[in-house]
Image 1 (cartoon, one colour):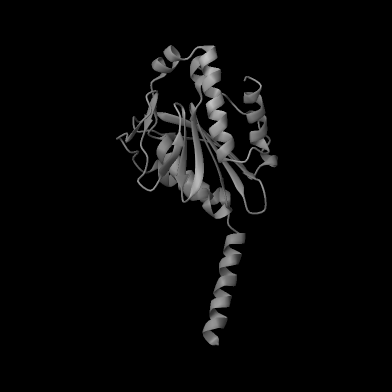
Image 2 (cartoon, helix red, strand yellow):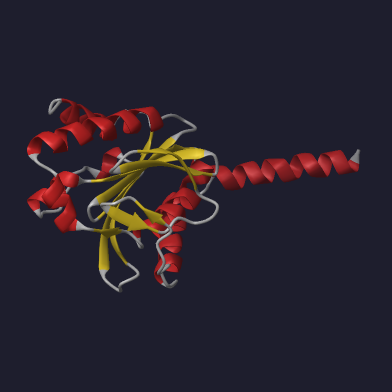
Length: 213
């Protein structure tokens, strides 16, 4: 009987810890650890227009030429190349009200060539148990829908990958005309909408892209 009571108390304590979980603090600590760790130098995934390193515990569910759906802890993470930014030679900047989100954070990491990667992280609460994690890293963006407890680990895997991305920008510019860009954008939207719920912050991006079809 005493053992049962101890187990119940332990579970209650664990629940309290989870409910008080400080997302921003945990993320800041993870980013600091990542920045203190040397980025992987090898690329074990080649996609023609860009290449990157993928950890052994991260899988690939499906992909097309400029986007991929990864599997991290059984959750889908959508990753895509932003062709428009490369064509325009200009990174997009979001104007977001932090009060509408769990967290909006700009920060830099160093890639495997010791160059800065400019990151924007947006975390949005979709429901009481589900969160949206959006990471923009230079000309790449990654999106996942995950419970609160999975946010930090998924972000860690995202950052491991983005620090190794190498884009052949000349090849991207040479290959994409406006028409081709729209065609590939359709493929990106298809994978994107299958992988993550298009709600809140993402809805405006999704609807904007659909208007170009």
